[in-house]
Image (tube, rainbow, N blue to C red):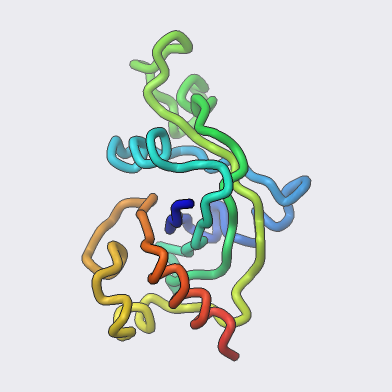
Length: 154
């Protein structure tokens, strides 16, 4: 089992959006970075845990937990000329971008702001803390456990 941190802008698609989806399952799409795409395509598996991270907002941090519930498949937005994620170089025969489905698990009892993550000694090696701007990031088992403990403290 792998663990991930997925970043999203909460006004565009936050954890509340995912919770309100039919069956609480949403498509994680719009990834247009090759390294992030490769992580989704090559390493993400059904059952993997996801830290749902709110970015580019007033309060950035981890809002809750989701789970990967599908294998990667071609992102349909790459074929839609009306989408901001349209890619004219991508074809149905040779798609460049993938997406997958995630399922809402829970909101954290306590939102974990980035400032707290950065000042938690045991998280100092976390990819997030080391200036990565990737929207998909691996998380170690130990980091997953620490984040979940922080999320459950009231």
